[in-house]
Image 1 (tube, rainbow, N blue to C red):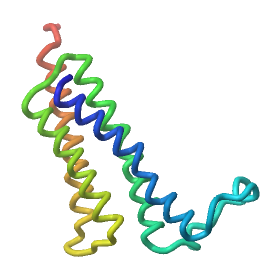
Image 2 (cartoon, rainbow, N blue to C red):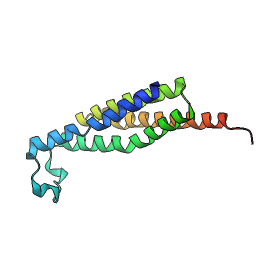
Image 3 (cartoon, rainbow, N blue to C red):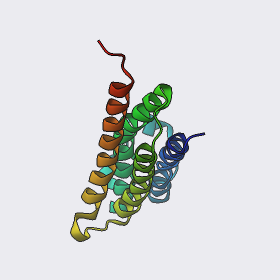
Image 4 (cartoon, helix red, strand yellow):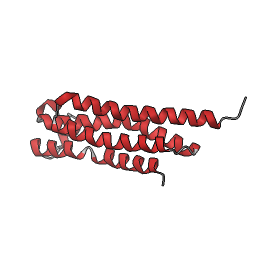
Length: 142
């Protein structure tokens, strides 16, 4: 497995586990879901700030994961695996770990959450550029 696919796997695992703090917070605050809760969704404002942040951190990861996964898979199918793509995949994963921790903890120093999100976004853009350049270089002359 390439480095890029390894970080895609780890990012997918992170995504699959990131909802757990939110659910733990909901259950510890309001108890287990009742049948009525399935038709009348619980208002997020009922929950402590850390529970709302956990929910938002998970949603934020969902929003960014699709582009990351697509680019990793396109690169893999095209046989593009370089030091740049491997580094970008690693930066994305570790930035998303840091983003989740900072978001959940409510750390506001130096706009850390925004800075870390932007680093993850930049890693996606580096992947996109590497794929674009790799496909351009591999294209037969017209």
